[in-house]
Structure formats: structure tokens, C-alpha cells
Length: 422
Image 1: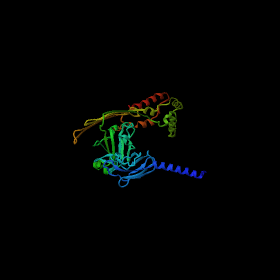
Image 2 (image 1 turned 90 degrees about the horizontal axis):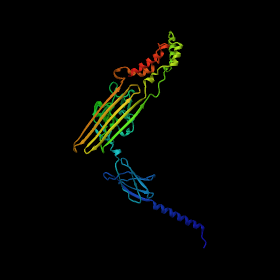
Image 3 (image 1 turned 60 degrees about the vertical axis):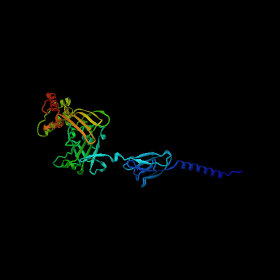
């Protein structure tokens, strides 16, 4: 019997088609189910159900039901819904997959502090910015204002000057008064009138910034410039002790160039000025030559230094039975880049709480701080703040000195400026 080669090819082709179709039908399976709320069991409408790693998906109907084709037994369905935590479920060989979704505490239960107490952020109509301690816990901060800077929209923070321990200017939504005080009201653990400069950033749990009238109405006119509400840490869980220490360095990156850096050029310019004014030169060529050889004192180098600052933080927290505690101490020693300037601060905090009964909770919050500035140039208007200007404008030598007395004059002037910062 003679076999037809053409018919033979058709048979092989049909056999291969049946093989692949059978394999495909065997691998794919139809999966159905109902998606409900994990709290009350109500069906959820419009839940997204997709096959992980693909664009294949569907949404639940009015009864929370869905039907989706799983490519194979290793498929994973991803269920997502606004306000609920996403959930991934391996399908396997199941034909019925029912899922319960839990509400997302991050989205729905985020609590912020306002003047009237605490509310869910989803229910809040006023403008409130919240800063958690986790946002800056790994940064070496020594002031609360540093934690606010750049982390809250509409809040500007600027330092008044570079003196150690100097105050910051905090403004919420700009300047609100022409002649009055524009500083916001500070509320610490419910107590109004706090001072940001005295608070240790490591003691803070959250910072809430109230910006508009609806959120600050309870504080009346005192809240017209905005309100900063600070909630300090409380003890919870097993007892623990934390120790945090860091050191920082500060220096002048570059000294300002002045003509006094070259005393000989300064002497020549002084002679030219006197001659143009109709007078006689003050320095001879020999004196100018001596100035070029001996130089003088660079008062910027005499005034500024490389400053070292140290910050030590120790805290103990926890809960034992019905008693919770948080104890902390902070010591800061900040040197200024101007010689003989600096700031030292010691602060202590104790937050204790006792649950006496279901209806009675007793708390005791104590806080103490002491700060000391070294050579406060701005105090009582003593004029010492002009030291930087003096270092930039003071001559390296006495204009009346003769060549024989130049060295003594330089030494005398150098000691004069140094004595002013002691």
C-alpha cells in the first residue's frame, strides 16, 4: 500500500494542534469568589482583581463577586481597593477564592492633634501639617526649628544670626502683622506658651502645625500667627534605654580677601590717598619695604577658629503594669566659630502616667532646662557684635608707626582684638 505524504503531514499537524490546545485548556482555569470587608463582612464593590505580573484583571460587581481566568496553577491574584490594605492570594488549583480585605490604618486612622483634641486626618477640614519624629530620627538635630525646616508647607524657618544658641524666626504663611509679634503660638502637651529653643528634639513624638482659622479658632487671637502643637514621647512596651551621642565641626570655609592682607600695598594706597588730598606721604620706601618683608597680623585668623560641638542624649522608657514612664536627659555643648563664644544647655524631662481605673488616668509631666551663652554679643547692646567688621577693617599695623617700631605695633594691635573676645 502506498502512503500519501501530503496526508501524512496533515495528520502530524492536527496531532500537534490537539496537543497544544489540550495543554492550554488543562493549564487555564476559571476562578470565582466574593470580596468582603474584614470588619463587618459586607461585600465590596469595585475591588480591583488582577493576575500578578500581567495586565489581566477585573473588578467586583454589586454583590462583591468576580470571575477571572488564571493562566496556570502558580498564578497569584492581587486584590486592591482604596482605603484597604492590598492582599495577594495564590490560586493553586482552586476554583473558588473568597477574600476579606482589612482597612488601612495608615490611610484612615492617621490622627492629628488640633485645638479641640484629636481627629482623624480624613475628617479634618482645616490646614494641618504633621511631622513625625521618624522623619528626622537619624539626623543630628539639636533644635526643634531644624526639624521644622523644609518639612511643612507654608512654614519658613530662618536663623537670626550665627551665634551659638541664637533664636530662630518661625513664620507660618508669611508675616501677619506690621507692628505686632509674628511668632506662632507654641503648645507643648496642652500647655500654651512654650519656647521652641528649650525643647529637646529627641523628646518629641509628633509636631502638628495649624495654619488657618478653622484649626486655630479655640486659641483666639493668640493663634492668629498659627499654632505649633508638640506632643512629647510616652513610655510603652518593655523597658529600654537609648543613648545617642554625636559630634559636629564648624569652621569658616574661606576668609574674605582684604587689602590689609598685603600691608605693603595698603601703605602705598594710603600714601596715594594722602597725596591726592594735598598732604604728604605717611610711609617711606624703607618702611614699605619692611612691611613687605615682615607682614602683619591677619585678624580674621585671630578671630575665627574651628569649633567643635557635642550632644549627648540619654532616655529610658517603658511600661510596667498600669504605670508607663519616659525619662530623658540632654546635654549640649556648642562652640562658636568666633573665639571664646559658645552655648551650653542641659535639659531634663519626666513623663509618667498611671491607669488607676478604667475611668481614671493620672499623669505627671516635668521639664527643666538651663542654658548659658558665652560672650553674648547681642546682650545690652554692648557693641561686641562688630568684632567681625573690626577683623575685616582693622589695619595690620599702626599707620603712625615708624620702621623701627613696626614689629611692636603689630604685636600690640593683635593682642587688642584678641582681648575684646575674652
